[in-house]
Image (cartoon, rainbow, N blue to C red):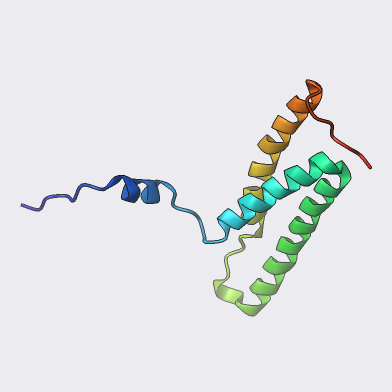
Length: 107
């Protein structure tokens, strides 16, 4: 009979946090960065996010051309990785702004 090996706490955590690819953490950090920038200068935070979206579109087109039949576009998922972190982070900033704990600046 074959016994299943019991996973340690660290192994369980690693198996739970299976990332789609290695750069997902960087996309999360970029989303948090965009939320912080949006707090300091709102238009710049949106601009940074749009620049990232443009970068991912360009990267997908370039990789599709270079690896034609085998390339799977992932730029939209990379963008959503960053937006999923930016939106709730900025939501917290909006709540704090509404309670007058901090101020979102426009200039």
